Length: 271
Image 1 (cartoon, rainbow, N blue to C red):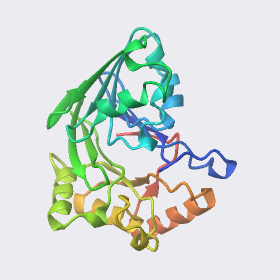
Image 2 (image 1 turned 60 degrees about the horizontal axis):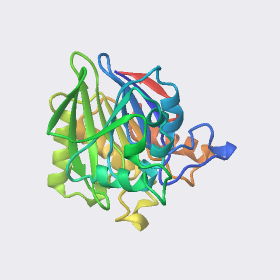
Image 3 (image 1 turned 90 degrees about the horizontal axis):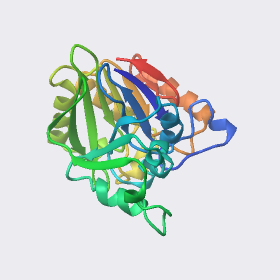
Image 4 (image 1 turned 120 degrees about the horizontal axis):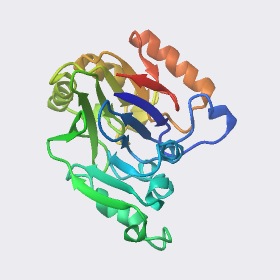
């Protein structure tokens, strides 16, 4: 599979030039499997430009939602395939994520002038089973601690790479059993190649932000070690952290775990 970070910013987007190096769009990950239609994880503002690059005309798309907070949905109304005939979009999430209710509320007056059912594309909603097959991918999920609930996703490709995407997770809110469950999620059916995890705060900042639903850089390193991840990239970068501050974040990560880094908007990886 090939992955592309279409948006890596947390909470709200930033457009000033001092955020350009790491990117200002909110959460969206694009996954192109070896076989089968493309996948997006979350619909932050990063999905807008990413969707415009999809091959035309029409086709299938899968959108996995981790949760329904605004920064992970705010790009949905500008998803260009919604307004083009020939596209079939499946919006999927576990039963504890109210995906359909949130999307329908967003896509109706007075929040949006066009109701979802009036669009030119075909949109369907699906509750995810424990294991969901999409082309060459097997997709699993795990509930993680975040206000209102959130899902982490694991994507495995047969004879290929594996990815765990865990945005909006508060590692410090878990007890030992929760952390052990996450470690198993990363280790089974085989140790994950890449862990992408919410590292919005530094270790110095996190004590004053308990209960906010996010993790620190040290939390991410602890999770990567517990899960035996081959590589760690942090995401959901603080909207207050400009490029200069993000360089300092990466320097800290490098001292904590070899190969760890902060994801950048536009970055592409082959797994």
